[in-house]
Length: 223
Image (cartoon, rainbow, N blue to C red):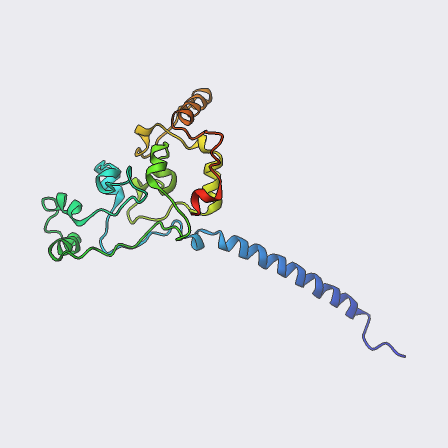
């Protein structure tokens, strides 16, 4: 019986199999990188708001403390969105006639809250408490980045489980004195020995090194 296919078909078939395998691997790698990209995680993308509020101006230039607007952050799991009363506490005198704050004045007059767009949000099945982290010496910029350099506020950290666990597993590297929690651009001691001694002392003082407490236990965040 004569040969139906030319011998070169064997080479073509092998090449097609190899190309398929390489293609599947390539697509998998691209998909893996894509889902972890800043675009998919929403980082570095500034969220437009009904009113332009510049942290760069209010925090970086004017020096407002985070707690002036986020009044409950040290006592509550939720940092809180500043009320219209807080905004107008200043803007009834400063830039009172500026069109930029017209929506704020309207909110004050009508009693209707401004519909701010959430920048940092966790899924409903994740529990996060701001007050616990602040009282354990975790600075605002650890999660929110240098807001004092942001015009439109953007999400700085991915807030993924992997990202959270990397901090929990190396918590000594992120703890700072409580009085520096709201400081933007905080720098620990440059000397490695002094830095390590300070971190060790803070971890002990703030009770984040209790051996019987598994800080990476699932039930800590998923309740």
